[in-house]
Every structure is written in C-alpha cells, then in structure tokens.
Length: 467
Image (cartoon, rainbow, N blue to C red; front, side, top):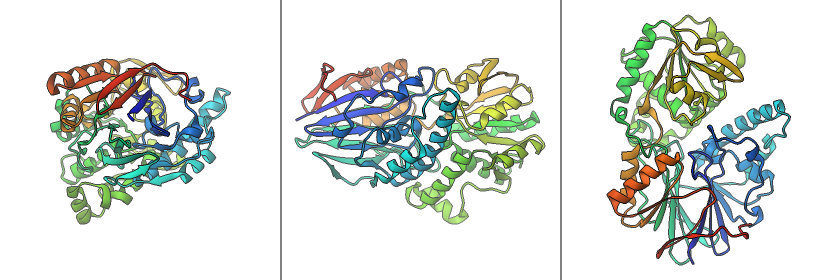
C-alpha cells in the first residue's frame, strides 16, 4: 500500500514541525508547530491548513515545545475534532505552554490589530481531545499501528513509528536528546522502520564541551560572580531550566560555587518544574530516581527563590549583586528575560550566559554572534555585558550523536529523510549518513511529497487533491 509523506513544516528549517502521513484512508498528522527565528512569518500562522481537517484520522504530538505543538489549538479552532495522541508528561507540559502562548500571542495580536491565532477556550477544547499514549505500546490508529519511544530530549518527548497494513514502516525521530543527561534516559533506538525522518539541528557541529559541561558551567558562573554584577540566563522553560537548577543545587551544596541568590523568574518555568517533579518517579532515569529517593527534591535549594508574580519579580532588583536570574524566553524573544536584558545588558559588570540553541535572526542569536546593539521587546539596547555561550547544554544531539542514532536504526532503515535543521546542517548530516552508513539520505524540501515502502522511496508530484 505504501505511505505518502508530505513535508509541510520542519523542512528547510529547524522549527515548525508538521508532517502528514497517508496510507489508504488513514491520515495521521505528526506535530503542528510554530516557526521561529529569522524566517518566522507571523501572517503565515493564520494561513489555512493545506489539508482537509475532516479527513485527518489522528494527530500525534512528539513533545511540548512550541515549534512542535504551537498550532495544534488552531487545528481545533478550525474544525479538527479527532483524537490527539501524546504522552502524559507532554499533555501536562502542553497545558501550561499553550495557555501561556495563547496569552502572549493574544497580547501581540492586539498590539498589531490582528485577531488572536487562538484563545484559551481552544486550548481547553484541544486538551479534551487528548488521548495519552505509553512508551513502547503498539496501538491501532485507523488502518495503521503506532509505537512511541523515548527520545531523551525533554520530559515525555517521543519518536513515532508507523506501520501500514502491508507492513511498510516509517518513523519520525522528532528532536533527539543530547545524551547522557542527569535526568532523562538516553534516546531509544528505532530498529523497526524502513525509512526514518531524522532531525538535524546540530547535524554539522560537534559538541566538544558536552563531556565537561558541568565544569565549564561552574567556571563560567564563578567568573561571572567575580565580576560582581548580575548573571542572566535566558533559559528554555522546559528541560534547560530544570537542568540549570539541578546543577546549581549540586555545585552550591558541594561548595564549588559561592552561595549567592538565584531567582527563577518565570511562571511558566516554575509550572514546568512542578510537572517534572510530578513525573520524576516514572520518567526519570534510574540514577536520578535513586537520587530523588534520597533527597526528595532535585531542584530546590536554600538560595533559590521562585518569583511567579510580577510583584515578586520586581523585587529582584532590590537584591544586591551578584545574583543569578533565570528567566524565559530561551532565545530572548519574549518573557521576562527581556526586562532584565534591557536593564542590565548596558552594564559591563553583567554576564549573559546562553545555554541553548539560538535560531537565526532571534535576539539570542544576535547576542551570541556579538552584536553591540540588539532590539529587545521593541527597544534598541546597547550591549556592554559579557556574553558567554555554553554549547554543552543544548538539548539536541550533536553531529556525532545523530550519526550514532542513525546507525542504531540500520539495517532496518534503508532511507533517511533529514529534516528539522538549517539547510547547511541538514545537507552535512545527509552526506555523513550516506558516507558512513552506506544508506540513502535525502534532504526533503518544504511541501515535497514522497512515497515510502519496503521497496524504497519515490518523489511524488504535489497533486492538487492533497485536501
């Protein structure tokens, strides 16, 4: 019967994951995310979906980052009424992420005299359609079957393997974790797919800092403290924030860092940290679960203060430097970090520590690249602060980790579609997969359609009946 796979998002770009898989009368949409970075097209978010929502059998969400789930409420708003499959932690994180997103986007839309992309009522409706899926449990979805596996990227993150009635198989890795990490298990190999759609965020870059990332983090924070200014960490609310809290707790407890005030100034990150605590006993790796039994809380320590309210946030300025402020958003493109960057980046005593991927064109990437003036929340800010980048803390596997993961999918996988990366990164990884593993590797373009079966893969013409 074969699969027909349409690459609507996550092709030619890191963000905006959106893939439609068809076999017979079954149509499964994998992710429906928002694009971010320099190629972000705000008006494009409002575009009509390029497929008939009434003909979608199911939606499957790999994990709760907005570039994978950010437009799912719009699907519901526009009429999709079927099941939405994801793991239990993904559901809980999606709940807080999408409510936060709906609020922020509504405020932005109002300022630009645009209608909101969706409202909280559409998030509520979406949540009512969610059906929780366990890892490693085969389940029927229309005329296909599906299995989710842990990717080690964020809590609840999953790869998706689909099988049709003829036994043809295809898998979507989603984002693959930068294993090993202190909290989550390593990504599970996909050993039962004819073709694999693999991410490539760091497909052309090695990450030599990974092996010594805690020591590098310690030394960077220690040097920042010596500067006697504020230390700003624009942290992604999911996974990166929790890792920062975990390591700061350990380093201060061991006396490796001075015990200075640490503020988690992000209502979203605070809520997500509570979700991590809720699911730790089931989804953390064995060593982290053992540590949890001994210490009861992996993220709290005496010098940490959480500031969920605006009033509490404002009081941070009264605390004497040096102090650490962890706040979202991770690419400095929203959230409370902008307030602190506007206040402190012009001061040479300030240290800004970047700990995650910065999309091209984002304020975070401009700061990372050494810009001396950056527009933050509509205001041009002069940068005199010291900007440090800690590459070892990325949540994504590097080029060697991705190649190892691809190798674990062989010999079952005969073809790889390289996606979810900047074009140069995707091309580089595709070439390495071909050269080192001896299998076909294709960089799929946006809106391309491919037929996939045990016999191989074939490029299709984009037909007019996709709807």
